[in-house]
Length: 118
Length: 345
Image (tube, rainbow over all chains, first blue to last red; front, side, top):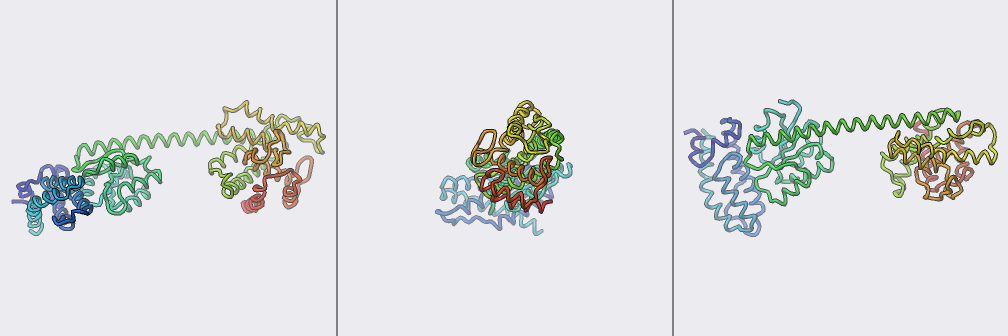
């Protein structure tokens, strides 16, 4: 299976993402490799401090924006919820969403990493 | 592609910059900045930027910081700024609007809408900027016409007065130097440069009332009798009457300064001048400055009734009070102004 086919099975709206890039599939793939780098560099850990989480919110906010633009829908929605909950002062609920979302993120990142190294 | 028209994309996330660049690079040149500080540098050094797509949340200088700088430089009036947002709070977006942003771009980007919205506003701004250029050009032309009108009037006076056109030019030069000096030395007399320019233009009409003075008095080779001197003094009020008859041919500011200078350039600090006997700062600072410039020039120039005095003698006469009393603060800057006048010549 190609990268894009596989991503589609993981809930990524590949069609919408490619359309946003004027139909350029290869550019979309390159963007996915950049997204992998971004996630690696700005990982959000579930053991963040409940009393001070501005940094977490900023990283989640940036990941939400990039995921949205690449139509990585599960991560866009997940980070969106996390940002909203942190903004409302509900870090424990945000932590729960993050814990539930991380395995999905891992699968998507693994998929991209495999194709990047292929 | 409309070469030269450049969109600046400001976002610390490279993916977002690349996607936006892809959306617009068919029709515009693209410039990218990964930080607010970089964006400020590019905006201030690239006249081809026609729009800025600006992320709000960035490390260091934020998007709001970029907007604040564009307000400071005035660029915000000529370049539409679009705020890029994933989910900023309403308060932050409102602050962005208050700082002059024109629209909000939400992530994920909607390609077609985005192209239309940004494209339309770029066209609108281009149209508005072109209109402003036309208005600016027309104002400059109007000012040039005003200037030449005023200079023509001044030339007519000088022709009557048997003086060369150099008299008003010298007064204009000394007026400019003294006003600039007094304005920067004494805060109570501060005047913006633009006002000083207008006053200098207006100063050339200070003697327009001399048109109404009979030749035998105006160009009398000897000393005037008391009666003749009284007639001569009337050139101040007559000048104002002439100006009142032609208010529409000149700019309102030039008219107002001309009127005041014309009437009050023979007033003196101690109240012993004419026509109104104004005292101290009842006399406007510009009328005071033209008064001292006029006296100095009359002393150092040859006239039908006297030879020219040396510069040193003229300065001594002014400081000794032989030509009436002047504002001590003006006398402070007068010597300095004369040195600059000599250097300029």
